[in-house]
Image 1 (cartoon, chains in turn green, purple, yellow):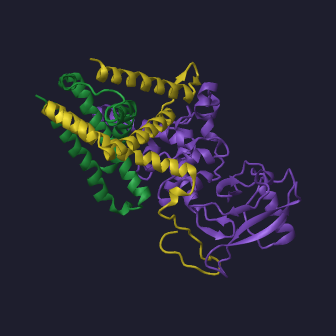
Image 2 (cartoon, each protein chain N blue to C red):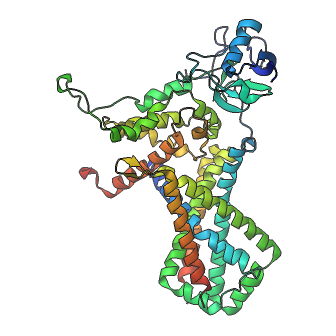
Image 3 (tube, rainbow over the protein chains, first blue to last red):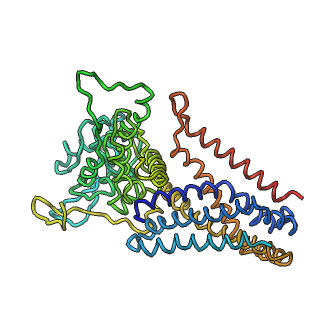
Length: 117
Length: 247
Length: 138
């Protein structure tokens, strides 16, 4: 697949990921990363979260969020490496690490989200 | 208000030095003087060897772009009183090679511009007997903003992506391509596609947004580029979903 | 004009300034851009954190409690606070910039981008409230 044809798709994934992350991640980080650990709000019961995780709709949303957010990271990080560390000549290696990482992460996400008993 | 202001002007004389140096001049601080007037005063009365470009002195020719106190500006549009009490640092436009003093080499931009076909491209020309191409105010509105570009290259100077990699075609070229793509009289969008969808075309842009901030004519090249990214991405999807024959 | 330049009396040496590695520190707008781009790393960290959470929930109650204890670790909280700041930066810059790509025209004139940004923020508020309700209801 030539680079020309792949770039627009990568950009669309990046955009979708950026939008999904912008909408969903802040509240989730606030709740699970800050509010519950600091005791500001009491953490939900295990049963409640398990029920949520089992629900096919939430499972799909969570999986979608993980995949899109990872591709968002991959695309943006690739350009950050180009502009920040100015290592554009390591193009091939950067692409493999970034997008390969996103694909690997997506596979892991799929396994974790969809193998809840 | 003091009478004079100090201008620290970058000098580069390749026949006698290998890197630029700074020379200071005192110029009268007149309320209606722009930085360009200061430079003209230096050249006329103090140091005739100073080299720089300028022409219309009213912000339409795009010749007098330079870096003033670290920001890319048209020197005819930056007033000395804005920099009171000074000093005012005048350097050549960044991201371009410096030929001499404040004169930069703009060949790269001039070679890129025609490649994007910045003119009305038609499949079929109407004979003049059939009259003009008519356009409604709404149709003109669609591209008018992008037609304001005066090719001053302040956007290239502000763009860090171009600074890091001169192969990037750059904000003004894409904005000008959009000016024609969005013009209802133009039929050449497909001809411009190849150059714009090159990895060094729109995809090289990371939406820093500095180009729009630097533009003295309100062209908003950053917006033009993002719109084209969306257009090109939609095109790609259509090309993928529709088999070749039916396109 | 290809190949290395040949400098002569009539084609003097041009001066080319190299951009330093820390080019993005020198201007506030460049710095904001760099931080915005770096936020993607924290988005990726959150994905890892989320997957660890889901895995713990799926494994059992004890694992879930162990995850909560781990998340209450001072350094994890510190990382997550920084993550929160960066993802909010991402969200705000995203909602402000996304309208530039989408031009909506109604009745001949362009919808102002502040309006599109406004709808983005509204969507963000609604989604956040729904998320909080889903997680916190008993």
